[in-house]
Amino acid sequence: FLEGKRALVTGSTSGIGLAIARALAAEGAEVVLNGFGDAGEIAKLCAELGATHSGADLTDVAQIEAMMADSGGIDILVNNAGLQHVAPLEDFPVAKWDTIVALNLTAAFHTTRLAVPHMKAKGWGRIINTASAHSKVASPFKSAYNAAKHGLDGFTKTIALELAADGITANCISPGYVWTPLVENQIPDTMKARGLTRDQVINDVLLVKQATKKFVQPEEIGALAVFLCRTEAQNVTGANWSVDGGWTAE
Ligand code: NAD
Image (cartoon, rainbow, N blue to C red; front, side, top):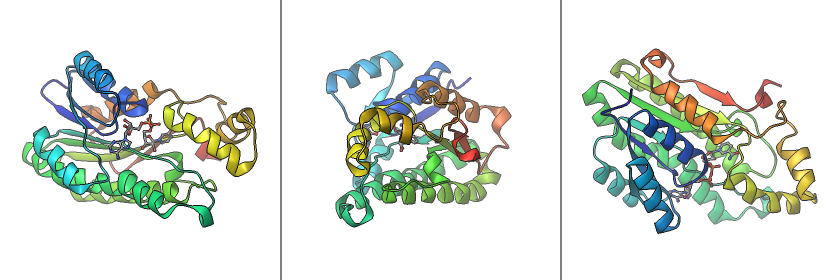
């Protein structure tokens, strides 16, 4: 049902973004991928999905502007690229703070402001922002990430109100722990920050608050993104959808 719609999914060479890109492409959307990775792997993904790819670094405004200009009009914008860093506040590298806020929050402002004129002209648009359970609640040692994701929730609500009369919806999807490289890569730092073993980090930190005791699968996020693009979801806007195994219910 998405034939004739162009979707840009940021951070879609891996993990959740790739699952969202696959789900939108399966419904007929023309997909623009974005993110880093091996050139051969990315070429394979483009062939699989009939997609194009932008390697723009979204911490750089000039590269975002070039990506948006090259992509053509975007009907479905998925702001998904994100980065995590786990460290106590006093040791938190200043450069990491800046990068995380730039990628997880500010990039969405830039892509959205540049995508909206086309959506308004069409009288239809979907903006889907991958936030996190950490857009609703906090955990220690993730100050930059939690600040950026709470900010993304506030940004999303604001644009939902501003764009509501133009046929454009804006929502957050907030996963708990999804088994992707982003989660796998934070295990060693969490072991160090908390003095725990790998199994203790998985069972006593990562899954401790997920009542289902299961990691979310990326495909589950893709399915929700597809629903948010449907006509039936035209009145769903300004919402922050938890897919977190019950974590934030407590
Ligand atoms: P991932 O590490 O698998 O993928 C991240 C993607 O972002 C990759 O395609 C990477 O190349 C891209 N990227 C990284 N830096 C970039 C930059 N500067 N410019 C452009 N692209 C860049 O991560 P993931 O787990 O799939 O996470 C995707 C989103 O979901 C993030 O916003 C993350 O915060 C959020 N999230 C993840 C989880 C989880 O448990 N995995 C939970 C909640 C929220």
